[in-house]
Length: 212
Image 1: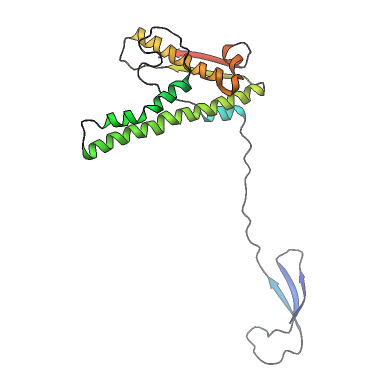
Image 2: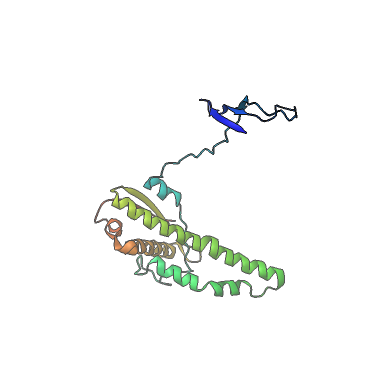
């Protein structure tokens, strides 16, 4: 029987009174209690390091740069206008809607492993590039809205690209339309809350545009 267990102040040692056999001595003489000293180790506690919540500028930086993709000569094919009424969401949905057609065409004229590799490459582009770019854009619009609500100022640089299928003047018009489609998307996003900042009616988002 064990009695009177006492823990020392160090928390890892103590005493108790017991009539248990002492060490390796085995006999029937358990009439009297002895005092036993004990030590033990405390289990190691996991260390949890709390990271500070990233500020809005860090959140925005975490999703940049964003690369957005467009179908050939879109928006508004064969136009020489610098503007468009399309927004990027419309263009993105049209692109996604044609994914199966692009995948099928990539395998035309090929057979076996070559066909499989070509079709997988197109499917991988759609998943890893087209859809990833739009997902990052959705995060950006949320962070921009949060920044404007907080009264922050954000600088955005937007660069427009076009493939060299046309001359440089036409590509400049096409790049301009693509940039405008992105700005149209941001103006409509979040219920239009970003619109006055995108148009410049209210300060908060400084936009620089480049045509490359």
